[in-house]
Image: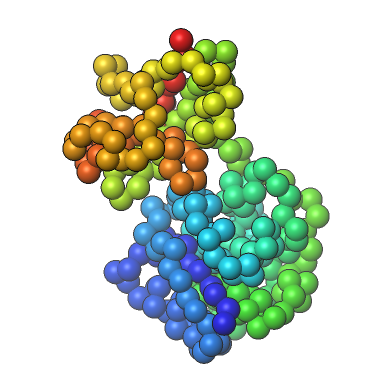
Amino acid sequence: MSIITLTTDLGTNDSYLASVKGSIYSELSNVRIVDISNNINKYDIQQAAYVVNSCFSDFPKDTIHIISVNDELSISNEHLAVKAFGHYFIGADNGIFSLLFHEINPDKIVKLNLSLTTNSLTFSCKNIFVPAACHIARGGTLEVIGTPVTDFSNKKIQLKPVLQADTIRGAVIYIDSYGNTVTNISKNVFEKVRRDRKFDILFGREEEKISVISKQYNEVLLSEKIAIFGENNLLQIAINQGNANKLLGIKMHEIIRIEFK
């Protein structure tokens, strides 16, 4: 049974999401639909990329991932189907694929050229992405539904931490539903600059700092702040059973500084 995942900013209060799922089932009754998240902030491709990147590899190979965020068709926002890491990704060429694949070149990319059965150009997820996903799920090739792209280039540069001999300057790139703030500082980068030295992680209000990396949230007392590398090996600033985003005043894109000594 094929798996089609959905990552969208459609929300769950309107009929849009149900319409997308109904369209999939109308084409394929023997398919499994998995919601990664339909509550992505409106038009926020960075959040969508982070969420998809955090979990797509947990799905079986050949899973088809529909990403519907800021996807209205235009000359500068064409629709692509991409094969990479043994998975298929369908979405708009609005920079999200650059965020997903900034370190590798996808195996195959096509610009979708499906014939529309409707005059509506505003519901790309249902009218373009769903037929493409169902075609792939039936065993169809990308070349049938699109024109090969050989000159793929990054539209948006991945926000990377700034590294100096004794300092790392990163930024908050995601805040989860628990209020944990995720940074763009990876464990590999941290260890490379650290070289077994002591350190202070500085953030939020000037007096806020953490000087230890924990392995579990419960290594500190309830309501205490903590630094931890999550499952995706990115540094998080959190509070044990609390909301770091609100209690520590940490916001999206805020600078997180690590000083080594």
